[in-house]
Length: 268
Image 1: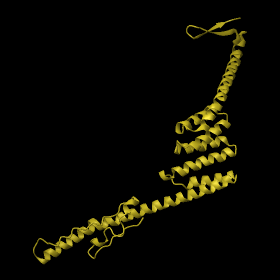
Image 2: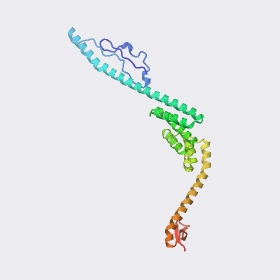
Image 3: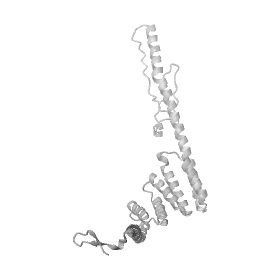
Image 4: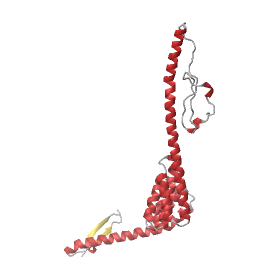
């Protein structure tokens, strides 16, 4: 951004010839600059005598320097600070992008550990600001796929979750997290990720096919877990009832066809 330097006459007034020259588009930079409007310079003294008129002019000059020159100098310093801060952020963003690009090259060469380091560098360099959300979410997702290739599925889930916190509609991050859940046999979680993808993109055939494939597997796992739980409950029951010469087999659950409720009956 071009910083507007204010020219002053020997009496401290702003030079009207500089107003708007070459600086008409500064407002587009997002920062305000000091106004170049002409200062009030009434030549009439109002007292009649030359001494009074001169005194009046000196008083006007002092007021103008106090009211206009000092604020402009302060505003210029503030603008310079804002420009420097913006330039610093942009430089950091450029460095983060360079590290991400290098990480992509390493990933393409199958160097997943080295790629992870570059993506991590990009995340450390990228400033925490709205304009860096995209690159940070991409780097987290890319770290997730690196971990997926390395078989570190828990890390994949963590990285993709971070990516989705930054960008909740990031389909690639959902796909990669879903794959990691499936590898860990978290079928219900994998199905949930695929359903989220369909909410974002109803035409995504990959997500639809994955749901159809995983639903029967998830149902089978639920049934297996239920049987295992019942088996453990029986073992616990028998360990207690065995002291009294009984077992859980002595108790039968009978369903009432009218109400659908169960009652327990004891049999020897």
